[in-house]
Amino acid sequence: MRTIDKFDQLKIARLAIRLEHEKIFMRKLIILLLFISSPLFAQQNQLVRIYSSDSSIVATGVINNNQRQGLWEFSNPKTNTVLLKGNYENGKRVGTWLTFFQDGKRQVEAEYKDGVLFGPAMVFDADGALKRSMVFQDSVLVGKYIEYYGKTGQPDYIKAMQPYSEGQFEKGKKTGQWVTYHPFGEVAIREFYVDNKKDGPYLEYDMEGKLEVEAIYKDGQLEGEYTSYSDYNVLETGNYKNGKKVGSWVRYFPYTKILEANEFYDDNGNRVGTWKYYYDNRRLARIENYESGIAVGTWEEYYPNKAIAKRKTFELGVPVGKYEEFFDDGAPSVQGQYANGMKTGLWKSFFPDGQLFSIGEYRNDLKTGLWKYFNKIGLLIAEGEYDLGMENGQWVYYYDGGQLKSMGAYKLGFEDGIWGLFYDNKTLTQEEFWDNGRLINISEYHNYDGTGTLDKGTLKDGNGTRITYYTNGKKESEGQYLSGKAEGLWTFFHENGRKASEGQMKDGKKEGPWRYYNSAGRLEDLINYKDDEIVEQEENTLSRNLDFSPFI
Image (tube, rainbow, N blue to C red):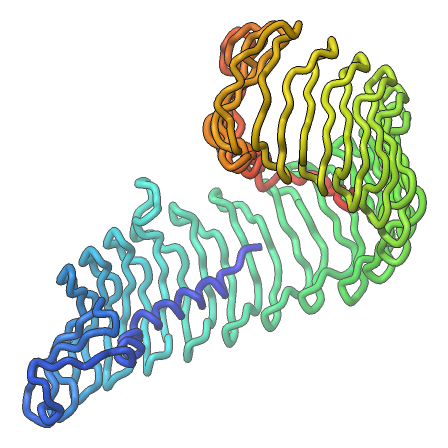
């Protein structure tokens, strides 16, 4: 559910800071008078200029009997832009005070009386549209408060004066009914406050006026029945006690009456009993077991065809004993052991046909010792040592036919020293010289039959270009290195010479948009990366994928 409590309080605090910032500003001033002598303060109606310590702001006004009087302006001396102005009476702010953006547009307009905020105040956005209106009494919010959508950052079809939210303040605290609106004026949230805490009915609506959430608050906490809807169908329902879920909670797939989950809580909000999750074909997807909020017993996950997918056992909230994963035909996928919540001992993974894919040991949840990896026909394709979960020492990689592909050493997960690259005919392709994960230098690039060399690029001492090739001598990749890491534009090619992919590298990782082409040169895909990870598009907020993270 959405809430605007803290958000509104933050904005109000920011407003107060804006309206009161002159007091802070004055503590930092270096007083420079047009008449440089202290007795001038005692003289009548002396015009003074006061600069901030860094000379970025200048205040101009009259001092009479050591008190500010009349109009004062605070401005940027470099641009002569007024940032704040208003009137003083006997050293206290009175009347209308204005603050401005750097471009001179009005930002805040507020009324003062005897040095305190008293009366209406308005806040404007950078495009000049009213953003918030409120009333102060003795610098405390009272009465009507309205926030508007405004212009800045909003699409043109939204009216600037369309209220975003509105309600009442009493002695600086929210009270009574508060309403939040959709961009076209439909009610989005209707809620009630007592002494600045939500108290009473809480209702959320979609833009068509359909009820989305129905709940009750008491003294700032959810209490009693809670129901959310999707197109008039119940989406989730259950009860709250002192702000915590209690009893049975039921969730359905959006826009249907098909059960998605059934969960249970005790009176203290702890998870208890057997939790069940379902697919939209009504078949069981997962079973979890809890005692007083702690995971216990056997947890199982299933495929939509009812076949077991994963099985894991918990004691006192941590996984223990045998762990298994399966393919949808029942064949084993992963086998291993847990002890005290951590992977331990021998772990194996398999191809769907039962052929071994990997084998090695875990210690304290980290890969350790010798690990081996195989292809689908059982030939070794990689082997090497792990230390603290990272590759360490010599590693050897093989082609699917069993021929040597590359060989070199790692130092705690980073390539280090000399690496040799080979063609599948055992001919040396190239040697690489690494320093703690940074490619520093490369040898000549030999052709497939070893009779000549190809342009390797300009890489030297970690900087320059690098080019690699297919066995037919056509270019495979080309790009830049900076300080031993791939950097800038990189291009990869199909074996027929057409571009296969292209994008930016940053510190050795893909960054930003990458374009992928088929062998005919037609754009097939555009994928965005951040730190070498694919940036997923935002999912529809109504989609509810089952979370199987406890199995990982």
